[in-house]
Image: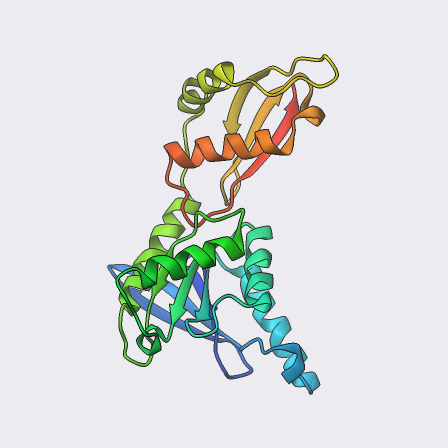
Length: 242
């Protein structure tokens, strides 16, 4: 799994060595740091303390990066450890791209890529707005496409939306579909703004913030994704007293 960091952008990759390797990389008129992290092996294969520290270094790379490129094996699909790494990157509000490697070894029909992507999205739900790129490191196919997509996700993570634009769009939608009332108390969202953080985070100001349900939070996130390109990026939504 790869990760990238500012100021040049940073990305990292879980390979087979035990140390993280930083490389300055220039492509598409952009300069960034590619971090090839230590491979995270399955618990059954971990027998030495050195392996434990390689896992810590890989986690540190995720903490420091802007975009994580999670590489999965096309022949085995998304395994539980892949899901754990994905959730860690999601919780840390990192951009995420999924690379399906060894695509050259998979027997294909017309809809193979579509079907595999569908299974991947099911395993990472509910956060499914994540780019999936099919590559072959051995055959060197679509490698540059993976870099292009990661750069797009980096831009999405840094996307800023004007407060006036947010309110004009969302308050009208909220009026048409307001939050469900709680014990007879009507919840009124009065104002929304994007917070000045390194990742997309939005504050919705309302009269009863603690009573807004999770499904309504998901509705608001869906509206944000529908109207703005936040592909590959977790969105944080906060409800605050107004």
